[in-house]
Structure formats: C-alpha cells, structure tokens
Length: 372
Image (cartoon, rainbow, N blue to C red; front, side):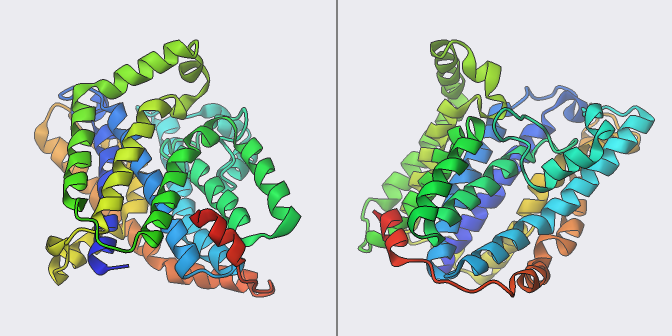
C-alpha cells in the first residue's frame, strides 16, 4: 500500500470520527441550540467507518495476517485496547451523573443488573437479535457491537475450511439479524473495493474525476436533505418498521448511498497522485490524529457530558464551547497514550493467550472466493 494512499485512509478515518463528534456537539446542552441537531452527519460518519473497516480488514487478512491466530490477536488488541477504557469511563460518568443529577441519559436499570450488562458490553452482544442495549452511557458503542461481529463472520469465511465454514457463517448471520445484518453490506462494500483494487492493477485515468464527483455528491447529498427524504420514503414503504424496530440502523437506506459514495472515493484515491499527502510533515500530522481516532469515537460523548456538567458551563458562551472542545480533545489524546497507542503491548498479551493455538494458513480457495 502506497504511503500517500495509507495516509488518505487515515485522514478519512479521522474525518469520520470528527463528523460523529461534530454531530454530538450540536446537542443544545453543549452548544445552546446555535445549530440544529445533525444526527444524519453522525450516521454518515459511521457509514464511512464501516466501509473503511471492511477495506482495512480485507487488506490485513490478505497481506499480513495469514493465520487465524494472527488475525484474532490483532483484532482483540485493537478492540480491547480502547473498549476497556471507554467502558470504565462511561460507568464513572454515569455514576457521577446519577449522584449529582447531571444532564446525561443514563440507563439506570443496567446498574441494577450490572454484571449482566457488563458481560454484554465486553462481548459486544448488546445489539444482537432482539436486544437493543447501549453500553451504559457510551452511546457510540453500538457501532462497535456491530463491527466486532463483522470481524467474526469475516474470520470464519476466510480462515475456516470445509463444512465448519458453511455451517458457522449462516448461524452468525442469523444471530446478527436484524440490525447488524442490515448494516453489514456497507462493511462488505469496503471488502469488495479492496479486492477490486487487487484485480484492477493498471492506471485509472478518470480517478480524479470520480473522486471529486463522488465527494461533491456526498456533500450535496447531506446539504440538500435528500438523505432524510429517502429515509422517510423507505420508512413509509416498509410500514414504519425501520423507525419502530431498527434503532440505530433505521436510516440504513440513506447510509447505503453514503457508503457507496465513500467507497468510490476510496477506489479512486488508490489511482490518484496524492502529492499533498506525500510530505513527511503532513504524513506525520495525519498519523498523529489518526492515532487517537478510535479513542475519540468511543469516549467523546462521555467526555462532553463530564466536562459540561462537572464545571460551570454556559452552552450559549462561545468561549465555554471552545474550552469544552479543547478539554475533550486533550483528554482523548491523553487516553490514547494508554489505549490505542499501546496496541503492541495489548498484542503481546493476546499472543500469550493464543500461544497454544496451532497456526493454520488461511486457504487460498477462501481468498479466491472473496476476490471474485
């Protein structure tokens, strides 16, 4: 993977996290109603995350992680390096909110059966089947509950052989229904783009045109309100089922289109001369921000609630809003030093746990099937 293309993927990942953060910042409790709530922006950021995740997982499984043990070690290290801290932070802020009566949507009932809901959180099972459980007050955690199961399905499809694969994968898909399964095509789109890149080796002369066109369409799509109109029509056509039953996946129709546009930008960027992303300064800056993206995504809502309640805060005061943003990003950076930037330490922990497992190379047939 070329350095500039890798830098582009990192930049896109950070911008997606920033979109989710910006969406939450538009809550009146943080910015006093200066902005209308931009919930769609968060959904489109998550759609971009799913496409990116599928692409990166397809790449590392094909180019780096040749065994199930290597794949599992890397995924667990990546996930739990941040998830543990995000859960602990969410619980602390929840308890403070309950004690001091802060403005925060705390699922009180979860603390009456804390071990059960902690188990759901740490096994990322809160969105499976009929369940729709937040990870305490960490309301961005739901997409990770989806993504972990996508990792698992992908691992079974790639690394298992014979009857086991064809038995286990359908069972997992059934367990994921309906919500994680409905969003799964966005993740699979990223996988598809990777394998198209692998097969399409020559230059694509229209890359710049398709890149900027898809980017322009994405911006216009959000600003025009077409995404909202599409979701409203789909909801009516399905008898209100999406709004009634799909929770965070209720806007799947508009997000499919966002995901496709993001997929086109990723496809096109591979063949562009991204000279602006080649310099060591810009590469270092993007990598620095990307190195705290996962932490930002999982902890930002808890941190916004913490700082806006624990200190005198006026959401109508621009200076207070600026301080809130600065405090959140500073804390995210500090947390990243002991979470995602310690992936190597976490990887060594999981390597020790898996060192008794025999290494098996993933079969070429599985990879060929995915590529097709």
